[in-house]
Image (tube, rainbow, N blue to C red; front, top):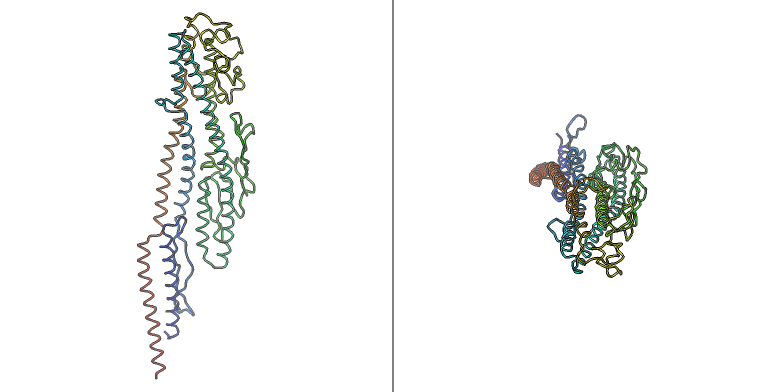
Length: 482
């Protein structure tokens, strides 16, 4: 081998170890960076005229466990879905209240029933009758409070949809832009690894909103597809459109068009509806809460309110058909065709409210009684008590068994609790899956101990190549001295 060939080989070796040292440094520095793919230097033998001419740096390989990343994204989307539902259902369950809490719906029903028992035992006592009125007002207000929280959570879910759609669109555009920049880097022979790290973080962000899969394309690009086959990015980014609703009331539903639906614009392929395309993830959870879970809870609360009105009406023989009883729909009679949102309008008849010109003796003698009857009469009070405590199947609602008002309140809480518990259990399951896939992903990531071992080998390679250059230098010096 000639001196010039030896020098060329050594210089190529120094260039390779220098590049390798840079990669080791980058790997160690980013060992805890989200979305960072471990770098490996690709080398091969350089030949000239069939003879060895040192080492060639082919490029940098970005090492990522794509299967683990894909599984982790799907698991994170499911985790986001159940986490969002669990949080909202927990808040609704808390406002309903545990049965052993004095502020619970069951406690208000029980206090109302107990006040009827004590008033029936002493019907001449205005104090006892006032307690019945107060407990009825408290019960109506508690139901109003629960209904208000349900609508508040629907409003929050609607706002969350709007925010997530905006963030999702931004992330999709980021992926499309990074795809184009990566293609330029690949075509020009550059290293696109840093851009790929950014793109992975952008796709991870998308994966928190919806379930998405990355499919490789030429020149280092990727396409993003949802599990149902809708394409979100493939040489162009799709756009989601949604319009937030300023005020949501119980009667406003997606089916009626009163609240906004989701639309996809610019997708190269769309399968099924936009809501089917986003199944799984926190965005789907927000739609499920706004349009399914919370309206179902509201509907059953409206059913309890209607049941309470009908029980009270049945106990008062002075009422005519179509007249408002002890419990009213915003002061008026119940209209079964206008049940939506009844819980938010439930109130106590002004005929028994002293501050509104009413009289508490009407509880004892009937709301339509012209004058006060015998102070010892307790037939209507006993009828109220019997009606409230009797087993009855509500006229509307889903999932109820026949029971007293107190039992129905307990069933209502149980329905919400079971939904919440199911989401909490799935939340724990998906969290474990996410951690398992993260562990698998990190197993192929940066191992700092291994990087330090590589650094030792790089140091030896550097020393060996430097020794060759030193030997060549000594040989040249010897030749010059001759």
